[in-house]
Amino acid sequence: QVPLVESGGGLVQAGGSLRLSCTASGIMFSSYAMGWYRQAPGKQRELVATVAPSGNTNYADSVKGRFAISRDNAKSTVYLQMNSLKPEDTAVYYCNAFFRYSDYWGQGTQVTVSS
Image 1 (cartoon, rainbow, N blue to C red):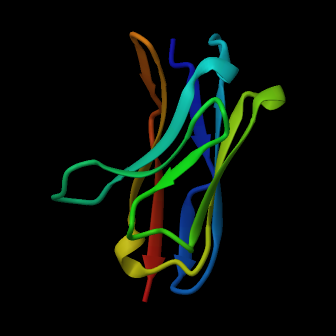
Image 2: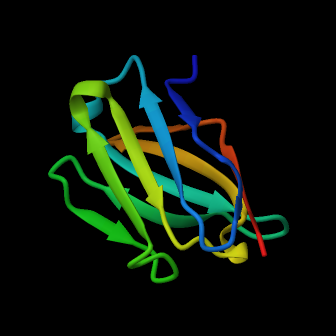
């Protein structure tokens, strides 16, 4: 059973915005560090942003000032607000939940930014 389901991807023009959502089930969401990663064709998966149970956030340099990660523990959901999107942001975006020895991944959602 996959406990993470992403949504919100799609096609957007450069300069536009998208909001990704990832809803967890079957885990104690508030205890997990949550993250967004992405993988572009022919490239390795890379970290985009993380949010700790405390609410502390961390961002890749390439998205700082443009993307914002947030979590709603009551809804077991983590969000990624993506603004000022660039063609190089095109990738499959994956949600991750990590706590001690548990490491879960969503199925991914495609984000395509046209120039």
